[in-house]
Length: 380
Image (cartoon, rainbow, N blue to C red):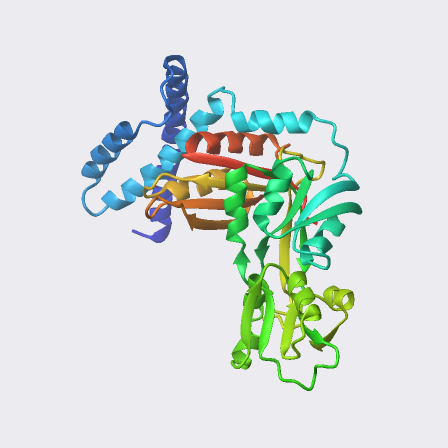
């Protein structure tokens, strides 16, 4: 047969498939209505297995794997369509609607009491002042201290690093977000200007040790590769490290921190920009005990636990694609205490004010073993 003749046959088959697919989806809608009346869940694993086994047997060995993959996707589409037709109250959407209904103005408040980790001069302080024009800042030794301050009502907001363009995600912050069930209400992308600094007048003494935050040390790994004689020592914060060097009596000690820290603590810059990457950025998030969703919020963060089975992640990504949402980030982490099972973090370019996006969140909440809405916010 000629190629054009084969393509005409394919077109005819596709026309028939679309008609049959539409009929199947209508039957799926009827199934959803029947299950809603009886209170049965949308997904029926036994029924799906029965269909796959029957159809793969008909297809034969050559096509069985393809039929199984095809119907796994059809089941996902069917459940998505059924969920959209199933009128039920979504707990996460109830929280989102409550946040949207509150009159919170057009942006984060200009004046606020904010918790930051570290001390004066820290990158968190710089991010805080980008988000809040007139903040009162309380400093804490650890990320957990920031969360505790917000949880106890000592501070209305907290500023924390969540991801670096070189070193990746700050996993401890994600773990604390899960523990405390807080929300992201704003974010700022800050360029880090890591500089090597030491006490004034100490340039004649070779540097044997450099102190900084562990993330900053990782972001400057090339410097330590070039200077294997120098020890890298982690500290709680870059600003704490700069203050430590300023108050030390050692001339062989240096810190990696920002230019602001050098000015603040009277240190001398020994080397400009020691970052591995010229464009080294960290995303800082602003957390709150309750969701706050401001006009212009176009980024959504989610945390999901999925069933430990083939296709579970693909089903979620397919739902996001069907909704026409751009997925910005997908990352996984092992779930403590559950061998070979993972928690997934998603960032999406979307707004909860979009009806299709709101429907998507409701579907994901019903589909996933554990669904956490981290927030819908603007990132500066």
